Image: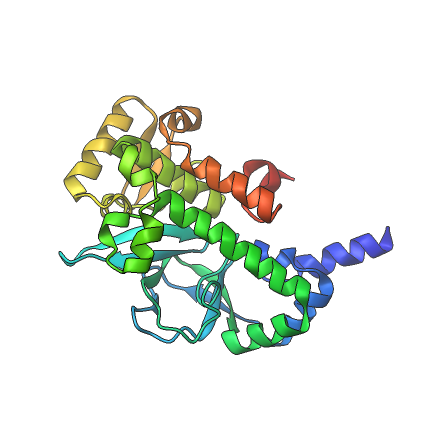
Length: 272
């Protein structure tokens, strides 16, 4: 019992990122000397621009969220996936030191743990289990891309082949995707009834104009599913919101549980 309590205490002392807390004690010990935490990363802070060398891995902690934005030819950015405390951005798939393809920004402010890519790669070379965890997380991230990337905004041949398989934006209505994004943000921030999303931010997530996003929100308000406040969306009927959402989030969560159980935030896990 004492050993179990000691292990729990050690895990809880780590940054509040589920991927870091998923590592066994020996693997985390390889990274611990190189982990730094920036406590107050601000919303909209730019982490990477297209073409930047990816040299630092950023782990969102607690309610913090990062987002990938794909530039479009009309000057708009299309948001593709959100990454919260279940994961990390920068140097996960590419192993770093390659040009960033998208813009990566802080979506919701909060603490971010940081590890230099070279230190992470050195630790991977020393531990097969550490390599395995990050390889499985990369697979989970790819599942999110398949589900929700705005593929018609991408022009790279290789990425276009991947994103061509994306189903969500091609087959689901704006209403379904609106409900999906709101639920995804709620799960990652841990808030039971609200998310700090403006109409403009929601429109960017959906890849539509602000007026279109506002009309969708108005229809949800008329059904008493949600309400809006300045700078935030309040959910009045979470079950009603789920009924209107597509199942893309559920597919991503199922893949996480199969590949990297215990990392993706769920209501049941947070309650326990």
